[in-house]
Length: 279
Image (cartoon, rainbow, N blue to C red; front, side):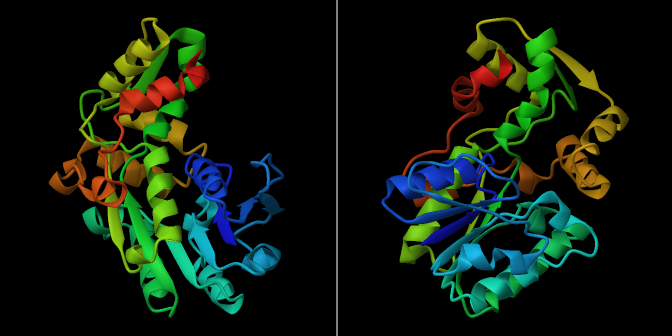
């Protein structure tokens, strides 16, 4: 049995579906009750209280670990989740980390995530680490303004990064959970090309078949909006990357092709599949 945390999110949902379609028993974990695919068990649990994961981990052989936002906050100790998994007999953990642990290693949230990677390596468990860059699904922040005003409002309109489709992250995670050859693997996950917010707005417009205007926010305006849904430090780290990406953050990684045998999906593909969110 495989446990998927964050099972109702942009990565967890397609991962749960893929594992179920592969014929594996799956336990989907989320903070609140949620609909899951047929045959999948759901357990409501808060990762900030690792002991509450015991019912989900009972009988599990593998765990996909995706940290909720509060586990990035000061004082959180997500290493307890790995300890709980090991104590429950879990054999393999696939951790969703971040590319920032190598591109911006001095940030507090990156230091904490790298420490969690190290804890996993030293746990005695089988493991794999996924380090995605920016998510294509972050464009859902614009869904309401596109629906109501046909406007995308974002900072740094003409500065891009190679955003990755969460479906590709999920597919790589499934491979790491199911295939022994990925034990000890560390994969950097990006999209196939650098794309700017203005170009993303154009791709959404194409998917809609309707014009979408781009409005450039100041960094301060963007920070105010982002801190409504994430810790301020994480918002600022994200804005640092979006506003001034390093060469490493602009690099298109070969790892998705290496694991899956095909190129990562472009943002336009994500926009077409998720166009209903913008209608």
